[in-house]
Length: 199
Image 1 (tube, rainbow, N blue to C red):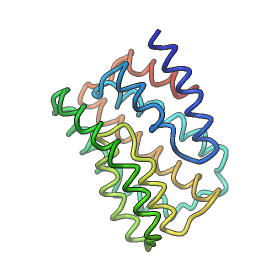
Image 2 (image 1 turned 30 degrees about the vertical axis):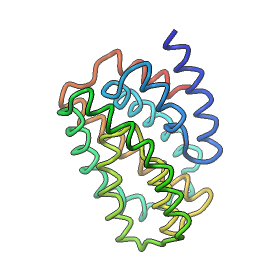
Image 3 (image 1 turned 90 degrees about the horizontal axis):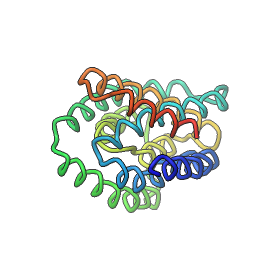
Image 4 (image 1 turned 45 degrees about the vertical axis):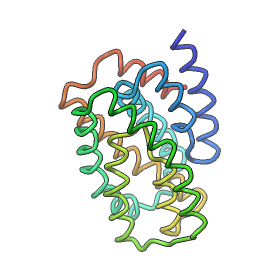
């Protein structure tokens, strides 16, 4: 029954994210949190996120702004690996608390940043990647924050979706590598994540 809930939620979340460029993690967070718990939900979502972002990259390939992607990724990749390793050391209760708290804070924070209409130069996008990457390593996803950062750097529409997806795919691959190195990935997690990502 859990697989049915996850599959239906994944199909809905993927459709929405395909339209607006983000949002799948927000929809999937409560479902994965409830059915799997935080420490299993995070690596499952990481597998799914790699596949979902791969799809966006394939569709929007020609509109990727590679300077922005590389500037963001050079700091966010090691930060995400550090965040993933931090998650592994936490107790299940602490992981649940962090995940729930981040979910409650993320949406108002993004609205506040959009309301202020702040802008980022390219080097500042790299600094933002450092912080967002670490957060991404710990929580299911920080898509709304990375979308806000890439928007603030001047990217819109196709280039925004394409560039954020390419950077996120690299960050999630690094996150999976950290989980793999710490023996926090197993076949069950990979199958669940692949099924979710396929939907």
